[in-house]
Length: 453
Image 1 (cartoon, rainbow, N blue to C red):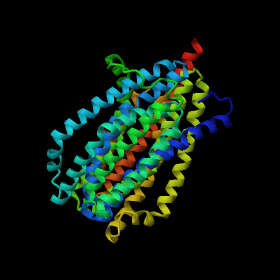
Image 2: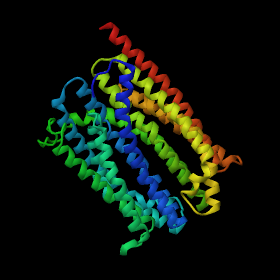
Image 3: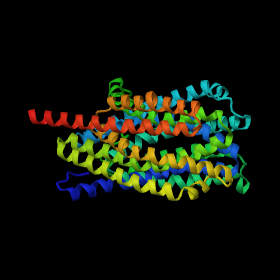
Image 4: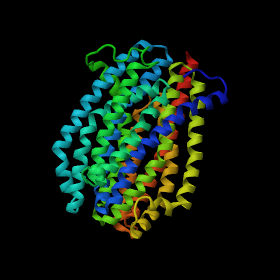
């Protein structure tokens, strides 16, 4: 990355950072998409089982990965302030933290997975597939969280094309393994939805090892001497990582978990409704990769400019990013509105399931527009290292407002399952407005402090 002076240069650098991240996120989302899609083609019970398993796994994965993503603003600030020599130490501490978090996740899963699934009172076939899917994917927890740290460092250095390269390797590996393990092709065991979990675990190991090899042997990572020295664990460094990472992780967790909570609450509906809901959520999550990628780009660029003391440039990047996300959300809304039947057909061959997916996708139009404002705004706030208020806002918007409204509408009106989606739309819209207000306050605060120096 380098300082920019004109709007044209900023747009160019923003797109240079953004496009590889977008491709990376779409590819990562595509792994979940193909897990759901290919399991659905195997059978409705497998689709529902993978849907339940994914609903339990994704909040844990994204929330804890969010904690580890705290390394991004730390490294970008170090690079912006020209403290390059400290990067290797911080990244090593991030790797230690990822290992500790992985072990805690595995222990928690071992103790609580079966009771949680039993409490949900699922159909026996769906419960069995969900349990075995999550058991299989657990073998990839350690490399997945390790890769999160490596990727955060890579992206913070502006080397987003490297992350893109690694993820593009992962996609064909995952789809190929799904083809072999879900359907039992070429003599492999016919595992159904459980095969998707096995394929994902293997894929996590592949991307971790490839990323580690690149960092150890390629520039600019070699110049930073990453992993050339084995630094011991430092509670002081953990404290800084957690101070930034925990609010980020909780913000992501509150947003992803509310969707998973809705899926779990919908377990009282029939298997067809669960499958259709999850298919619609899965596609909407794929579209969410656009604002999420813009969010990650803004964290890197705003963090770099803030670390360098160029507050005007940081503010200009925030306007470019949020404006682009809002414009693209209108385009994706048109896709959902006019091509909903084609999208639904990607997930199932059963007419009843396709019809339900189409209805859910109409509601998805509205909350993905709110996401286009809220998510990039969070990215800007992370670039300023202002993270705690955002997670409070997310908790209030999604859990105090959105989920209760959805539950009331789904339980006490004729809307049924659609009531949950209206609740989600309400929470996301309120969250977007509150986050924008927080950003305006933070930028004014930075401007006042700069003026008094």
